[in-house]
Amino acid sequence: MDRQQPSLITKIGFAVLACNSVLAIHKSRGDAGSVAFVLAADAALVLLFLCLRRFERAGGGRRTKAAVWALTTLLTAMFASRVAPLMPPAVAALVWALAAVTVAGGFWAFFLA
Image (tube, rainbow, N blue to C red; front, side, top):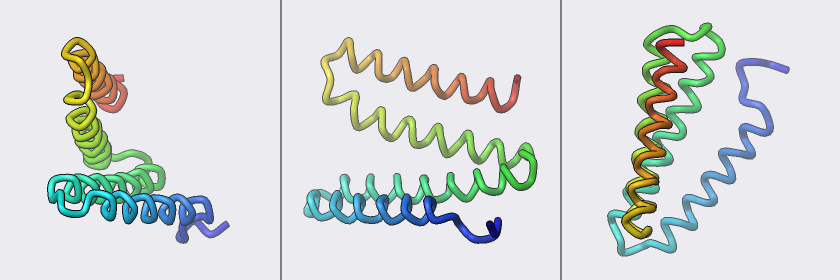
């Protein structure tokens, strides 16, 4: 398998992401915030994929680790910010607490372990 070209499963994954994004944007047309959220999440996912490929190939340089951690932190915060308002206050606090633990755990795994 040629390591320079994305695998078939990667191509399928991006196709599913693209279809899902188109459907989400179509469903939320007229709501600029939702459209911006979908586009920002897609951009972060694509950047994360590219950083992970670089991370795997280059052996995990510190700057690549920082980029991967920052992108996963961004995605975690983005999704928590969309889910938490839909929950009762105690569950919303739990959502944010789990997001914070996830971010802290990622930092520990990448930089301290």
